[in-house]
Length: 630
Image (tube, rainbow, N blue to C red; front, side):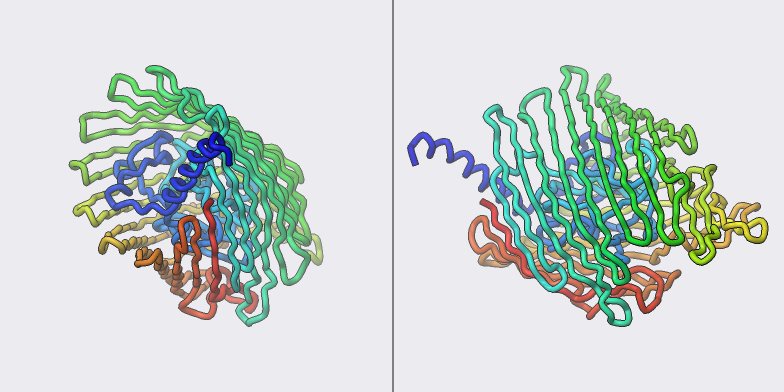
């Protein structure tokens, strides 16, 4: 190699080695408490001082857990209820109301909203990426409507990927096993001469079929492929821009029909400018297209456009103000199948609003946050989502916080346009209604975060949530009339959440979490509800998880992840415990091989669904993963 070219290559090698080191870096508990988060107030603040119940899943957690999908990575967050119905359907909630079409948790990735207006939830089967490109996943438990808008009722999941400047060099991954049959991905990143960076990537995955309770194969294989790109400008300039996009396609198996077909694409652009003495201004816009065809059930093509602006500014040393606005329009054509339809078949929805939040420093150790979002939608008109939060810092290692917030879930096509029919007669037996109201919650929270020792961090939170206008199923008023969806249910939930992070010794770190939940439904005086709320949530009384990370000599690591989920009441699902183990070996710099076992405590178990012979159960599995950084 000519000397000039050799000199030019040295910085790239150093950057790649630094990127690998960053991937494998293990922070101390004190450093973890000082992590920056943005999801609580849409501005940078320290995790230890955030006035909300928040946990962060970092890149190191994902890599050392051995999870194989983005949905599975959500199990690593504290106090999230993550369950699978089958090989393609994940049900993920916080603080209750877990159903197959879970609808009270808002999910975002790099500012793009992933929830579907079809049912106000997330199709987790098509949310995928190269997991090594995730910087962190911030999970807020509790309402986030003031900052993030409608549908952030019980929490917000904010997935943040790495800037392209952090992913220069190459990564290749290959994994194969009994359940995760094949995962193959590759990514290449470089810098531009002007100082910006880009990365391009591709990924293919194939997950094998599970089995039914009677032992017959469920034929629910899932396979998808995707290609993507991200470009970021120079991080040192006052005006920065970012552009990213992705395209995917896939199939999902059924035992009794042809495969589901899914495909989609998005493009997202963002501009951020630092203004002298006037804070930061950000503008973000994206277009998202999705398509899903489930044979004999439904077919949907959806187009979504969104524009979001935000400005952060400090005034007078006491006020940290965040204000902004958003407008989103989504158009979908939904056609039904046997016994299933939407009226009208095509619908366009508009949602727009503005928000303002001010954190007021009353004294060095005490802050009060006031905020509200005004949001208008086509279904229910204007919705107001306010919050009041207080934070008291007792020295450097203790934070006490409290909050009162209101959030709403907007009606969806499932609530207003759905028609279920008797396949034999064509008679409508259940119908949505155009005047369906927004569900709402008023949440009361109290939290305490402390680090009594450098090797111990504790995080506690308690809550009481009061829900109104919850979805009900109203008995027919006359013979032959359909059951109508309504809003005559109310509920009160309460619970305690605790997490502990312990540095047992220099090479061994443990993190545990516990969450309890109590829930009680009531009906309005004029209610004719026949469901009693059973169809709106099937939640265990508590959740428990324990993660262990152990560094061994000679480049070896041994990591474990234990979960216990008690029985679900209706429909009944037995309690189960799950243990995943990962043995990793850094063979040489930039090459790591892992042996991963999942669901090791039993041959198979169910996680969700009615107790029928065709309920899906998930088997013990093992796979080998090899990752190269070069």
